[in-house]
Amino acid sequence: MKFFVDTAEVSEIRELHDIGLLDGVTTNPSLIAKSGRDFKEVVKEICDLLPGLPVSAEVAATDYDGMMAEADVLAKIADNVVVKLPLTLAGLKACKALTGRGIKTNVTLCFSANQALLAAKVGATYISPFIGRIDDLNVDGMQLIQDIRIIYDNYGFETEILAASIRSANHVSDAALSGADVATIPPGVLKKLADHVLTDKGLDAFVKDWKSTGQSII
Image (cartoon, rainbow, N blue to C red; front, top):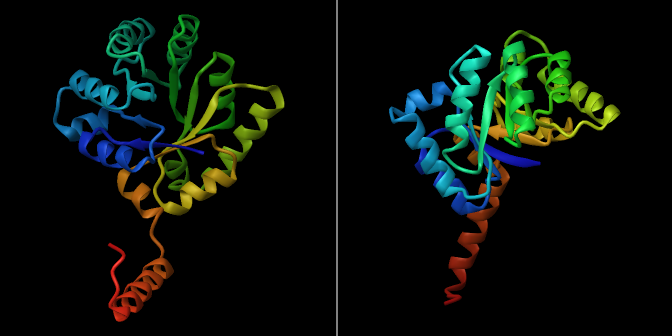
C-alpha cells in the first residue's frame, strides 16, 4: 500500500519524507486554510520537496468551466501536481477532459460504489472514498472499499483506490486488508502506526540490560 500524507504543513511533510514513509501528498481547501499560507505557494513548495511524487491540489470552482480554468493553473505549478476534483457531474466531465490531456486526477468526496464506478469510467487516476465520514453515519466505510475493489477488478479499471478520511491506525490496516491501493493519512495517525506498548516495553528492557553490561558499541 502507498502512503500519502494528508496535510498542507510543509514541516510535517518533510519530517515524514526524511523517514522514508511517503509516496505522495493530498491537500484540500480546508488544509490550506489551516496553514494560513498562499495556496499556490504551498503547493509549489510541496511539489519541489517531493519531486516525482503525486501532490493533490484541489480546485475551488464547482462548475465545469471554472474547474478547467483552475486546473490549467494548478497543472502548471509542477509536473507532479494531481488535480483534485469533486465527484459531481461537472467534476466528472472535467476529469474526462483532463485525463484526455494527460493530466492526473483525484476524484474526491466519494461515498458510494456507483460514484466510484463513474470516476473510473471517466479515467480518474485516483478515487477517494471517505471512510471516516461514512463511519460517522453508522455505515461501514471499509465495506465501500471492498465493494469498489471488486468492481474495479471485475472490469480491469486502472483507477487507484485512495482511502481518505482516515481517523485511526486501525483504519489504515483495515483499508490495506480491504484492497485499497493508497491511504492518505493525517501526520499524527501516520506516526502512530509505529507505536505498540510491547515494543516500548521490550525496548526499555533491552536498554536496561545493555546498560548493566557496562559496554559501549562505539
